Amino acid sequence: MKLKELIIETFVLSSDIIVADEQGPGDLPGWDSLGHVNLVNALERVYSISLDMDEMIAIENVLDIRALLTEKGISDF
Image (cartoon, rainbow, N blue to C red):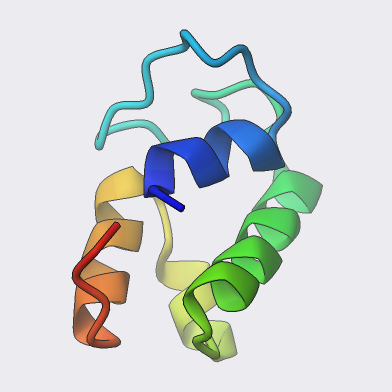
């Protein structure tokens, strides 16, 4: 699953919504504190990774997620 699709599915957004790298909590409907936890859980499940608390807190936008996935050795996102 592509990252954009994962974000859209997690936040139950319309499939035609634009998900930009600069967007973060408050920029996308549903990306609040609970949505953030749900997104982290989805990332761990879909990409078979584990995120520690510091990594979870460091996610401030989509670009941060891309960088984190790259650090974890994931390239197809």
